[in-house]
Image (cartoon, rainbow, N blue to C red):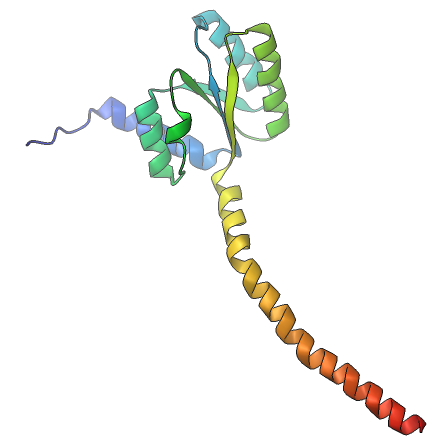
Length: 161
């Protein structure tokens, strides 16, 4: 069996998706089934004004880009005609612009997911890993501190008597 080398255009798309995912503050996945080119252009313009960039990629290439960027779980969201909104800045403003666009264009049927950026995900994982250690350190510090308070109270009681 011979393995076929991927075309340069496909490699460039995978690299672009990976770079945009790594740089984004958040990512919003939508289904845009049936929108015309003009409607998509209007959507892109409205999102650009609030810090969003709406892109449509082949799902397999977007999935490969996500894997390259270290973003897990995107595969299950990329089903059917999917659009990816890369958010730089205010996620709420971009989500509101998408909601307004969905009201104007009922074919922008749903938001499938809002994913925080890679940095936010990493920080959350680091915090979750560190939490038990911090709790243990606090408990270990409490033992000698409470012993010292008890000892001081006993000394104060003996001096008062």
